[in-house]
Length: 265
Image (tube, rainbow, N blue to C red):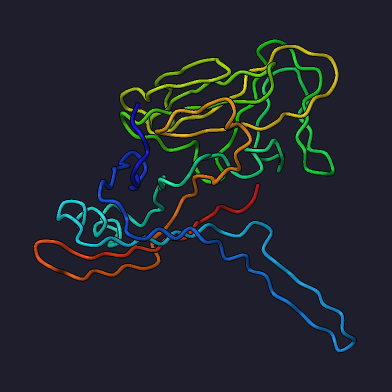
């Protein structure tokens, strides 16, 4: 299998591996917390409900071919974006709530006879499903999760009554292949695939159960004991900063990106 030892970045359908390892990788999140102090001594705070992910990378003595790719992305040669980014530190590409079996409910699509519900504590539950009912895990921005040729996709789930499946699509959302179901699933995207839609396939049960954690990763294989790893997400990102210091034949580059979002569903 192909390990995810480096950054994959590019426009949809054009993800490319940047083999030069970044000398600095900053994934800090700006929480957007503001603090207010009343004259009476009370303290209140406000914060963004879901702070946007940010990424800052820098490379020293980057090879010309790699540097040219990063420059092209920064200059918008392939269009204004946003870009697909899979960084080497990401261990679970599901959003945080999806990785733990939590809401929002809009992050899931139920097909079949069962009932999918978000409780007051944000836990997602499934009631009275039948065999082969499906739950699609939805990407917050794109039609699905971006994939790259030759980069394996892996998925695992925690419930014994749930199995994983993949459906692959082209850029125009045409079906191009599928894999699974399996409780521990690995697949290589078929030729022409740009997106993967992960799906949970249920077996029949009576009553209500929490959906439970799930894990989606590209590159490194998944083991069952990793299910429950907090999701980093796979956000659509746009370039907000770029520096280029030439040291022929190499260049020192830095790139900063921020998550872009659609209006919440």
